[in-house]
Image (cartoon, rainbow, N blue to C red; front, side):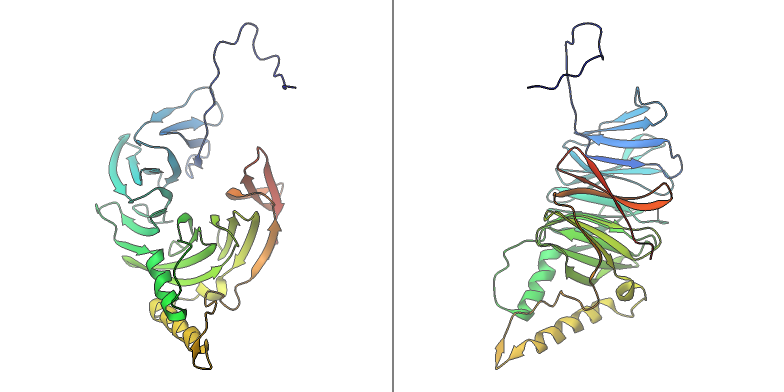
Length: 321
């Protein structure tokens, strides 16, 4: 039997419409201002009065997957299914830059304290570093190329599970960021100047990693997966200190893993991405595919909020240290 919603109207209901909201982001400088994406459109709302949007933007040609706002509230970036990232100058209310992936752009984020620097990733398996003064990315890394290089050190087997990049999150320092991909791995990168290098990677989930989220002020990273798990990782011992050459250290770890895998004259496949010391600080069996993660303080206690395939939002308590 259908559930009836009563009491809303005094006469006939002539029209219904429902619209999915794919991304929301609050202004850091104006806490009551909320940016939301729905379809190809962006609405700017005042949470104190939600009757009508303050502004509307329609700058993307396909469905928007992610919104990002920089520290100064000067620019809003919208990544969509065409691979485009439209960067809107909020003062002029016009698109100032159009950036591009070759496939769906799934995530985009501005770097803290660097209002014209942003990172993006997509289903083209590319992770890109942009500066808004340039029309092209400053640095690009193909996750599949990196993994094929590692596979060549371990075995001659084919690569079956492409690392489609679903989500990225930047630590509060602005130089360390994490990326979650379809192969279940979390990859950690360090930005140095106009490039970034891979610092660390580990197998986090048995299915794709749909969300990653750095907690404020610490190198604690949440990952949410299609396997229904939410995990908290403490990577401070791995990235907390600046290494002289992250690239060389990664290649050295690969070479050591390859050398240690030789036994009886044969090269046996090893899980070189299982970095010692990287174990979950907290493991939550959520049970549903994770769509979004958010950290919040509620009634004096820290919580991680989890959105999934259902209509409910779950809140889990977090450890204090």
